[in-house]
Length: 109
Length: 189
Image 1 (cartoon, rainbow over the protein chains, first blue to last red):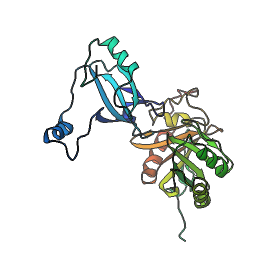
Image 2: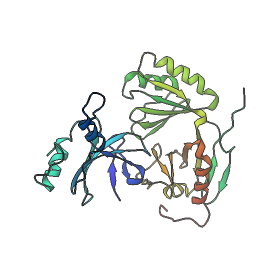
Image 3: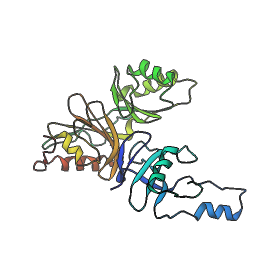
Image 4: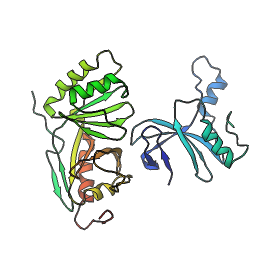
């Protein structure tokens, strides 16, 4: 059972109270972008074995979106943080580095 | 004007805890910056209550104020008083980036009371309901079996449960099932 702490209301919500909302930190390409950029934005997703960043929504709770960093192999959760960020906070990155030295995920490492 | 009726017309059930629909209640959704002094003043002056902290409900002079999310409050007053409260809150929040809406008839309210009340809810929601973790004045938005709902603990040990009106019968039925004699787990006793 996956338990994530909602960074907005502080609840340690178990999975059924949340809704998975796909990958975190997607950069949107809309009108005016090239076909390649738009295709990448729409369809190309990370599918890592290990460190992953996801967007979740506390749907049966405060209703807010947040981001979570976790490992897809061990289900270890490195931390959750508000969605209004362009990259994961340093303390979460450090925590991942301690477990997975040299990890990379998109442009983050 | 037509006569307002609550979702289940006061249905009740007695098992190892009592489940009853409380009837009509005025409810007002307020969204805005909860940290602003204008919002705190509006809640204090109109409802006579302090601004609730995260996941708390505060009982004031003319109603209860519940924390729903970082930018949302649910204010509960007498059903007939909701419209004038909305006007008073709008006046108090004039010029602020805020929203005040009367949602009185959007929800159903249930009271679960008696020795086993805590257990009735613990069976339905993924929430730590041990007395140390969830006491009077705590509110939790969560799911009740398959639908969204919320509940808080009153000073007298009873719980009040809110859900959307469209799922009122479902929530009453699962509360009734959970409270049926013979279904006691005795985890909190």
